[in-house]
Length: 193
Image (cartoon, rainbow, N blue to C red; front, side):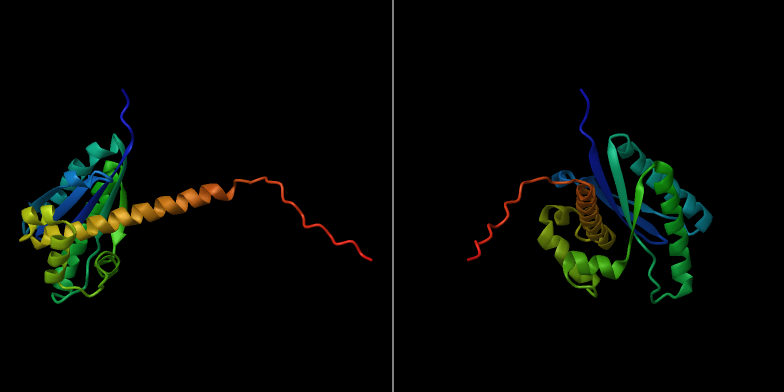
């Protein structure tokens, strides 16, 4: 018996010290899963670990359907280049691993995801935790204290919404070439006197 093709979405919140992911088959969210991986200080080794981790995590899902991996992009923050550059290196390793696994990467802007998912582009960490608590109480009961997993949940939801929008656009594009034939009745002209 053939399995019905699925769409799996992964939401990854990367940092230079830790990776966090929330993932599920779209439409089967009660079975959402999550994982984390602590990264070493040695950046070449951390990049290799990030590459292997995401590839091994994502690759099995590509055998049964479409796979999308939403990854938060680096933010130039308080730490300046000293924290942004290592995070960008990890992001590059993740993107390479996603590509190697045969999945599609969705690059996520932090503020945009916050706005689209929570309604507030400048929401703080406590606000994101509160959003997870209200939107997904069973998941929050397990991950509530892990801010990275709460952020990954928001990124996961943003990824699923992105896929829904892409699919809707694709369906409309497919209808553009369809010619609908129907008989149109013309109004009768009044007889001129």
